[in-house]
Length: 278
Image (cartoon, rainbow, N blue to C red):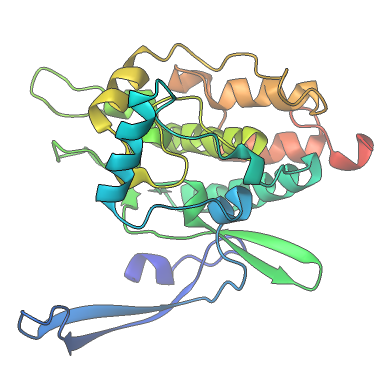
């Protein structure tokens, strides 16, 4: 809360107040002290559900596993193709949401903080009249920049993580998060906005808790780079695909900074302006 009180930006969810309150969180357990956080209200849900629409969601983990086993027994894909129920974002929408997220991220990085868990479900939408605004939320994994990572477990959402933070050294520790690992996550959000899916077969676009983490880690470790998916969306500008390749570069040094992205948007040299594509 102290961190967030010092951050104020139109594309970052603001936190107003926090308090402790004794609460019974289980009918079989005692009353425990819980922290309640009052944050800015966003009236239009999150970016993930804005894109996936009314896709059916299994009611329990058991049902999900049963459904997966049935599909495998029939020789079908592990997960059904739900793209028919998804919203296909126009370039104007992609451009607007991307610019909002990049603006909020640039402000966070300027304050020397790393988000570490950027993904569509952590990007909230607020509608004012006919205008949508996208705001970054969920700062539970935020850390100051240039702090060595001490934990040996994984942090953030694996399917949106940069490859370098998923690699372990000889002591079993994972790589450090940096501002460039946030940029890779931003690139994955842009990819999801363009295609309504992630480039990994083992990733669950809707419910991350049902992902087979071992299979996903193995796939991520062998993922070469962003391929040319422009056949799926040939109407999107070539500059957008070129930009996406830079965001998802395997080498962090090849990725732009958040401020570089904003400069590219302002100068129209790295991301085509939507008004000129019409």
